[in-house]
Length: 119
Image 1 (cartoon, one colour):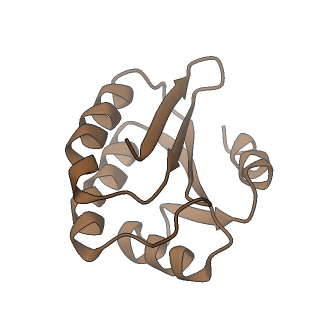
Image 2 (tube, one colour; image 1 turned 45 degrees about the horizontal axis):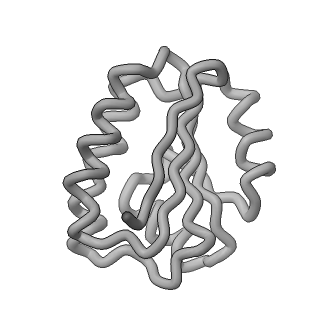
């Protein structure tokens, strides 16, 4: 599996770590994501760490993942952040999820500091 997804109920926060996500990973991820959306409380936050990925998402995978943005918004997301230093990743994430959905930060700590202010 090229990802992990965990929900911390005490912090009302989702942590995703993704390493070289492929089309074969998408069905399982969408199911896991949908199940977590049933657990979150309003004003939840999330991070997706892609720092270990060697490549960006293929157009096919990006299109398959795009609905997760709407799912998170509908569930009451307060904010989402991506963790990457790669400028190509940052550009792709904005294209997939839109400018208002999430920002990208160089470190997990930086992302969590910003997100905690949104809750």
